[in-house]
Every structure is written in structure tokens, then in C-alpha cells.
Image 1 (cartoon, rainbow, N blue to C red):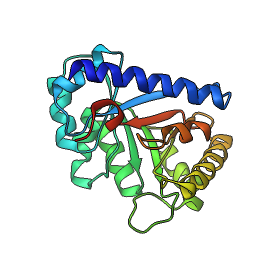
Image 2 (cartoon, one colour):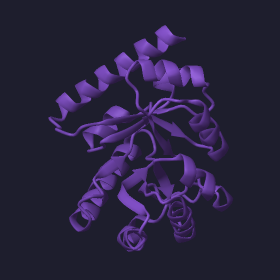
Image 3 (cartoon, one colour):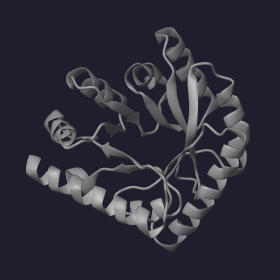
Length: 222
């Protein structure tokens, strides 16, 4: 397992560098290893090969891994947020990528305030406008960002999107990039575009992503 993860990480980093060269981008890419349903041993193997950012989808699993993995890493919560899980997420995550409701943002802020910590946040945008997907509507981004900026313990860092695969996905990636640029004109510190997974991260980099979330490509299929 360890050797396979080492090979996969090297391969992923090579593909990232090649994607950057093709689009002459000077972006520095943050690689998040999506470790949901993976063991501490998997995380340790990735850590030993340079990975310092890990993504989790479930609050209890995040808490368990944060308590049991004793290395200094950055934990990203990337799954849907249930209001009764905000306390666990606030306590254990450094980043939250999936804020899409004022109620959730308010509760996260309150929990962080009681912990005397600030949490980095991305707004999840439903860039495909599909009713089955989470995220705010693109046209409400600035209004929602204004609300987040009013919360003392939330650091607005950018947006997170889940484009479709294929031709539609590339159009949505372009739209995401344009939307992100509009946000940055108002809030320059919101400099992260969290976009791209195992199946589309090279295209995402082409369209300006600087934070990618990779699971299978590093750890293999679940």
C-alpha cells in the first residue's frame, strides 16, 4: 500500500506540473488528499510522501482522525454540513469548503468564537445549477460573501465548485473562474478556487484552480 501511494503521489504531482506548464500558470497548487473512508495508515503513507493537506466528508470521521493522527497537518472539511455537526467541524477542521447557508455560517462562527479560533472558509457555489447539488446560486455570491465577511471568526478564502465532467464541465469551470475573479475584485484575500478532483483536475488547473481535491488518484478506489 505504502509504495503504491508513493507512486500515485509522484504521478499526481507530475501531472499537476505538466498542467501548469501547458497553461503557463504561475498558480501554486494546494493538493488536498481526500482521505474519507481511508485508514490512519493510508494518511501516514501520504504524509511520509509530502502530503500535508487532507480532506474529509464526514464530521465524526474527521474528529476521529484528527484525534488519532499526531502529525501537524491541515484538515479540510469538504462534505455537506449538517447543522448539528458544526461544533465537531469547528473544533477539528482548519478549512471548510462547503458553506452554502447563512444558518450554517452563523453556527460555525459561534462555535469558533467559543473555541477562540478562526476557520478558513470557501463558499460552495452550485455552478451547474442542478437541484440535486449543494451550493448557493452563482448570482448570490457577492451578497453571501458580504455576510461571511461580517462574521469575526470566519476567514473568507474563496469558492468551491463541483463542475460536471465533459464539455459542460469545462464551460462550468470557465464560469467558475470568471465568478471567482469577480469575488476577488471585492475581496482580494478570497484568492482560492477549490475546483478539480481525480477525473478533471488538469482541466481545472487550466481554468485557474489553485486548490484540488484528489482521492482515488492518490489512495486508489474505495
